[in-house]
Structures are given as structure tokens and as C-alpha cells.
Image 1 (cartoon, helix red, strand yellow):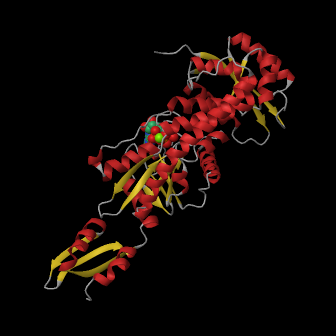
Image 2 (tube, protein in one colour; image 1 turned 180 degrees about the horizontal axis):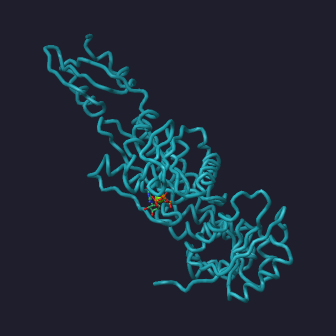
Length: 421
Ligand SMILES: Nc1nc2c(ncn2[C@@H]2O[C@H](COP(=O)(O)OP(=O)(O)OP(=O)(O)O)[C@@H](O)[C@H]2O)c(=O)[nH]1
Ligand SMILES: [Mg+2]
């Protein structure tokens, strides 16, 4: 059922030197749309710095007030994260509900979260955001109780202090629930480490095509697996990390991880709350930075992604670039150069080139060799057949002769069992 759309005026402060102000307002519109809010007006102010008390100046507030009446809007959305007092002051000057960019993003995440872990993380982030804003937010929270966003878990009309205590208790409870989940996943990750399977993470701005690229890889190398991930033309289609095993034809394999996309001014609480999900990223062996090369703002997207990676402690991990959606540009593709590939996940072109780049970066510790395994060590033949790329097998009087490509570490570990050639 289509919900009755709320009407909003978006307001932005264009601080001097903000390089992409117009684009960030456009993005705010998309965020609002993702929250089922209709933007019916837009107002911006050029300043040298944000007005600390009201976010915008007195003259602008009057202008905004008129616009609200004129367009019959019921909510004002500011392009930055507002302080608790800014929200309070603006709401009382305008007699209108005021929300900010952060709460929009939190709402979208709340609506999209599927797994228990994602739901817990979003709720923690929302509660932490609410805590200092309890007074000003009372109105806006009512909105979320009814429409988009997190289900209101019965905070009711209790006294402020009681509210605060409740929220703090709830945060603590949620966090300990989360810790248990995280501990379980860490054990799984350690297990993978032991297996020495390299972990590769797709990272990048939201809507860049990370999930599409994941699907294209799976289709090419594990077509029987039927393990597609969700793809959609909307902000934050992916909220959970999903991991798939990719097996290349020569038996090299790696784990490919699809992650949540980044956006400029991703709320700090959210990054923190999602840190455990994104730990995969910080522990990866290689990052594939997916870029929507057809988006005119792609350079800005790259910067935002790099900044967020830094915040996650993942800025030291080797990175390659997948310039996706090349089909929408004039640029020739597929094309592989240095550490980047022009490709199209949708057209499934350039996937082999990307794989080649992955090989160069991840599978360096491999060697070509020829070994003879005595017959009493038959299990080793089975091992190498499973974990190495065997070019040829010959049965000789002393044992099985294999020509193969295998991990250097495997060769070292078993070399005492081989017969001298
Ligand atoms: N033309 C074109 N569209 C693409 C390509 N790759 C992905 N898309 C489209 O871009 C949109 C976003 O794709 P996703 O794969 O969901 O993007 P994502 O990076 O996973 O997005 P989030 O999960 O929201 O962060 C979808 O509508 C895709 O069909 C491409 O190579 N060319
Ligand atoms: Mg996705």
C-alpha cells in the first residue's frame, strides 16, 4: 500500500569551499524519497560558517516559514547533522517538525535491516543519536512511530529522565546481544583464516554496483550455486554483509564479500554501530573499490569511500578499482590497466579482466612444481587434487607423479613426504 507522503522542505547551508553543495542537496532529496517523503521545496543559504543556535540565519528562517505555509509542508529536513539545541530552536521558531540528514539515513537503514545483527546495530545507532536530543525529537519520533523507520518500542509519554535511563539500559542490553553475535562471526572468520582462503571485499559508494558485480562473478565462476545477492536501483539496497566462495577454474579460490555502501556524511554512530559488520573489510586481503564511473560525481564518491575506509581502519589494505557502468560512458571497455579495470557488471563484461587483476594481487604465493608422492601417502594426492591445480598425473613404480601449481606453503609443509626427483 502506498503510504500517504509527508511533504518536506529541504534546507542546506552552503559553507564556503563546500565543493559539491548542489550534489549533496540532490542526494538529500534521494534520501528523503527513500524515506517516503516528498520534497516540495528547497532553500539554501551561503555562509562562511553555520549559525550555531539555529543552523540558518534569522532572515532565512522567515523565508523558510513562508515557504512552509505556501507549500503546505509538514517537515523541514536539514542537510547536516543538527545539534540538539539547533533542532529545538528551529522547531520553536518555525512551529514545524525539523529533522536532519542523519535521522533520514538512520530511518532508511532501520527499514531495510533484515538480519538480527543489522537490526540491532541500527537500533543502537538510533538510540545513541536520540539520547541527547530527547526533548527536540519528541515530535519527530512520533512521525517514525507511525510511518517509515524503526518500530517504536513503547517509550510512551514518560518523564524525560526516565526516558533517558530506559534508553541507556536498552543500549546496554542491545550491545551485549550484539557482542554475542559478533563473537560467533569472529569464530567463523578465524576458521576461514586457518583455511588460508583469501578474503576480498567489495567496497564503494551506495548504488555503485557492488552487488551486481558480486552476482556477475558468481555467475561466471559458480553458476550452479544460485547464490545471487539483492540488487536494486536505490540507496542502501545492501545492508548486510554477504560472503560467497568463488572458485576459479584452476582451483584457486577466494571469499568475496559484499558490503553496505557508503554515502557522504554517513552518520558517525552508524559507522560505529556497523563496525562489527564491516570488520570483514578491515581484515580483508584485498579491497575491490567499485566506482560508478558514469556518475559525474564519481571522484567525490571515491573520496568519501576512502575517508570511510580510514574511519574503519581499512585504509592500509591493498586496493584495486572496478570502474563500473562503463556501458553508460564513452570509455572503451573492458580495459585493464595498472590497478583498475573498466567494466560493466550489468553487461557482464570485464569480469575476466578483473579476475586477472585479483590473481596478480592475491595469488602471488603460488609455484609451479613437479613432485612424486609415494603410494602409501595416497591422501596427499587427494589433497593436491583438491587444493592445487594439477596439470598432469602419472603412475610410476614408486608413486604418483604430479605436475602442478600449488601454494608455496603447501609445498613446504609436505615436501618431506615427497620422493626425491
Ligand atoms: N548500466 C549499468 N547499470 C548497472 C551496472 N551495474 C549495476 N547497475 C545498476 O545500478 C543499480 C545499483 O546496483 P547494485 O548492485 O544494487 O549497487 P550496490 O553498490 O550494491 O548498491 P548498495 O547496496 O545500495 O550500496 C542497479 O539498478 C543495477 O542494475 C552496470 O554495469 N551498468
Ligand atoms: Mg548492494
